[in-house]
Length: 90
Image 1 (cartoon, rainbow, N blue to C red):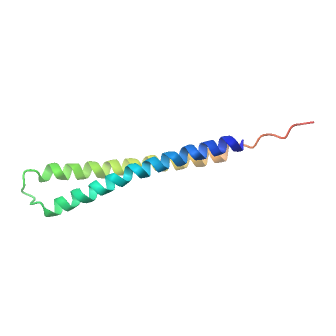
Image 2 (cartoon, one colour):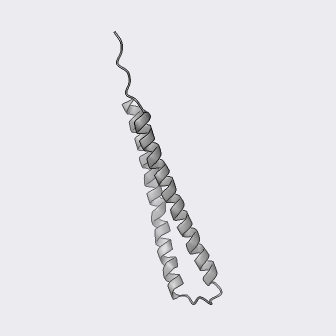
Image 3 (cartoon, rainbow, N blue to C red):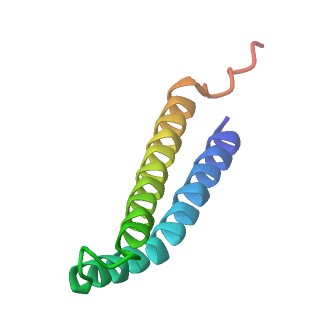
């Protein structure tokens, strides 16, 4: 079923692309938050809140990586389990 394999491949590639697009702004915000933390005094009353934002951004990035890995594994599984159509018996 080459058509179906291409369909799955395209589906998982789209997931990967969307995850990449989601990770890009998260990386930018994470970098800005990290810069902010470096310039903040640890005794500033907002320091812990900004640090919590940083941790949550890292967590979101890890979740994206896990979903990306699941999509890769699912694509590989689909490739292994999809079989070409049988030749007609005449």
